[in-house]
Length: 383
Ligand code: NZQ
Ligand code: ZN
Image 1 (cartoon, helix red, strand yellow):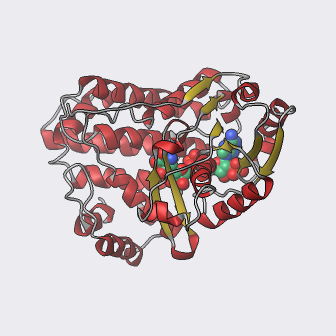
Image 2: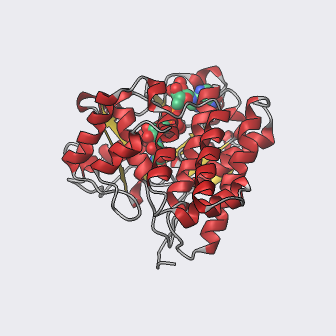
Image 3: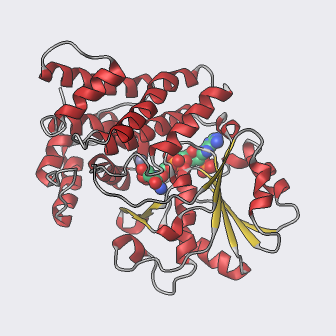
């Protein structure tokens, strides 16, 4: 196990009827901007609960943050925040809204072009305080410091993070997730699954607690995930999925181990170029990564096959194939397609992604050996 130093300062308020707690978490004299997406919160009562809780605060609102949030929209939000002299931001929605608010919180306290944070040209030195009300379990953004922003103009989707972009608090009320469309529920389960594999499915780091914890999260997803579609308003299923997704990426299971993240980096390009949902992009890429990196990941693939999918028979290669098939079948059981051709991306499309990795000269994965040529192999048609 490698050395690590870690603190996660996010206060989690979990459970039924907890949205009203935001009133106690935000000082009474602070002027608040509520930020949200395309309006799902107005249809499912979350907006009403939030505004009721803030009836004794001064608040404003900014709506229209899109999925895979755009830099351009975030700049509009910054202008509104400055105009109203807001002190505190409240993100109400899924990962896109929360990520946008992290970026906005830093951008509102920066005089230059905040895209610099994404390209690494500038570091975040100041940020506004913010809290979140999560409505879509998937990204873990409610309990981490990362954010992913897209610049539509140049079809770029980049990630950044800062110790200053942790939420002050996050409200996790599983009842808010009853109204999720099946596609988003499935995306969230897959996103969580792949957050875990990015940190666990590498090589033996001799980090037993992290491994067993990772396997516990995967088990929750594999056992409860497929059941949620027949029981969308089952509190305990939703609660387990929500808490699992927070743990998938609150960075605990990534401590002391070498992590991968190649599936995410390749997936981000599929979203940037072709608008494929984040969860869908991961369902396409992960089986390819497992297949092409089967030698490097052998020990952990076999461990996952045994402990998650109960695969113990056959040769090493057969068990690896069975594990990859089990992962793919799990994604399919959630109604998500796993081949690029299912999303009408052809050879020319793949070449576009490969060229981008070539231009950036990126070498990804736990061994930093996934270069553009390997990306081409990963995205190539599987049998
Ligand atoms: O915009 P509204 O109307 O609210 O609708 C949203 C949106 O259309 C809808 N939705 C959310 N909660 C709902 C609901 N509909 C009905 N009932 C509810 N309770 O769902 C749609 C998708 O929402 P979005 O926030 O885009 O989804 P998700 O949470 O999957 O976030 C994806 C974004 O997070 C980034 C992704 O790249 C992507 O941009 N990620 C952020 C990470 C992080 N900060 O750590 C890590 C992840 O790997 C990921 O990259
Ligand atoms: Zn993700």
